[in-house]
Length: 52
Length: 191
Image (cartoon, rainbow over all chains, first blue to last red; front, side):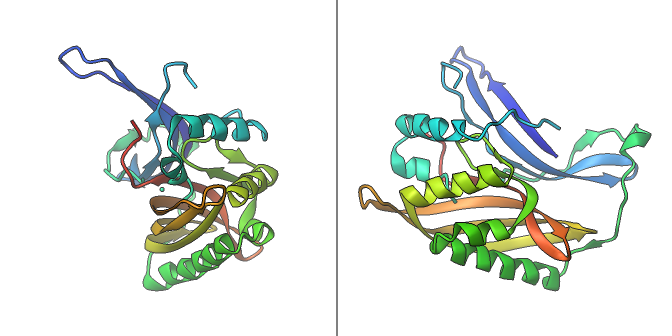
């Protein structure tokens, strides 16, 4: 599964949120009738303030 | 599944923009990867019949690993020799190449341009270590890491590189081809 993922991490204490975004490549397997994530490669990198 | 809206040319602008944000050695870790890994958690609850998979038996053996080690050894040699045509021979008919800090290259022409850009900019020497590989019918995945050195041609600056890679291979006409390829630097995030 190929996806694009964006994540914003906000820590307690009032520090500015950290934005990361990038693509992921994941392998899902079915275990006991449920899809589970077996391998997940991601390369989330910092998102500039301009959004580039 | 998200298929990014990717055109061929913007990759170059994007690379240039990223290079201005990062120092060059950091950027270069671009070329060769982090598999953040690998928890096993529920991603989908298996509620849908339409997702019922065809599940061929998985093969995960030393022989399986060995065949991909050989294949990636060929890839490594062609990287060192800047053999774009040879590298394209290793890719499937509709590949996606996902380097760090750049939009994915979708399709053979986009992949070609990405390698041409890299080879016009850098000399690479690296070595892949295959950690695991699994074959599922005509699909296989391979997890690796790589270490090596790169040289920025314009400046002569040389540095170490360390990456993690994840390959998805597809069997086409009996031969394994790189179908999806993602990598990230094993170095710390910039900034």
